[in-house]
Amino acid sequence: MEPLERLFTGGAGPVVIAAEIGINHNGNPEQAKRLIEAAKECGADAVKFQVYRTENFYNRALQPDGFRIFKEYELSYGDFRELKEFSERVGIGFFATPLDMDSLEFLHGLSVNAVKIASSDITTEPLLYRIRELGIPAILSTGFADLDTIGRAVSILDAKKTALLYCVSKYPAGKDDFDLNFIPVLYKKYGLPVGFSDHSLNNYFSIAAVALGARMIERHFTIDNNWTGADHAISLDQAKFSELVRAVREVEQAIGPGEKKITDFEQKIRGLSMRGMYAKRDIPSGSRLGKDDIALLRPGDGIPMEEYLSRIGKIVDKDIAENEKI
Image (cartoon, rainbow, N blue to C red; front, side, top):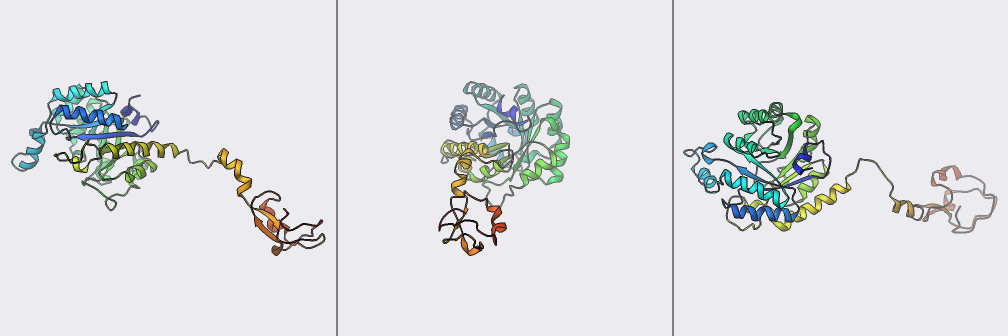
């Protein structure tokens, strides 16, 4: 099953780890391909891009700097068609954030397995309604939004094809910005798969999120943090991303069904590790056993420790040597 399809199947299978390439291709399709290959080498399940026509989501007059940056990094629909095909050849999932209605229609025609709804579009209801009409699975990012806003967006989308991402829309974000316990809160409230779009500069918040039930981790990704461009400085490089994947895979192996089990190794050494009752001194037959006569030592064979109190005050029916098991 394709990783993004796995996300919507009720939590079965490994956590989906997505490399957010975004606009880190700097407007260069060949650089985008390098990033796709590098993400695959690091163990990412999928890569994510931002697909847009700058004129359709930025007001050139009111935000000229933003318009200029996004226009500079804008790739054509033909480029993205080629990048999806390239991702398929590499063997990695491909999805994207549509930042305007035309780009959503393009991605639908491209038959992507999911789109991500940017936090800044959680209130763009025409976009949400159209995603539902098209039947595209949606990953809804929740930065900027309170529970009422999230609930409104969820009510518009198809619940059977929706996942949520806990997100703080700050770059970079840190420990004082997060409340990772909101991840299980989101799951309990909506019963939808919940992931974490992590904008921090380290890995341990993502790892903690997995332990709290996150089914997807999304991280900005670059090959070189020193490359010029909007997001390279706040992205994970290959070394950090590879470490993230390794850590997440190990942590999820340690997450079980919530049952206390005794391992075979514990069973083997249990008797050696628990304590037993031993004579602290020579105890002659006919003596009344007192607390001062008993040393609680390893190994833990002999009379079970739960009988300790019931043995105090009893008459000893044979001689017991010092250090002998009682």
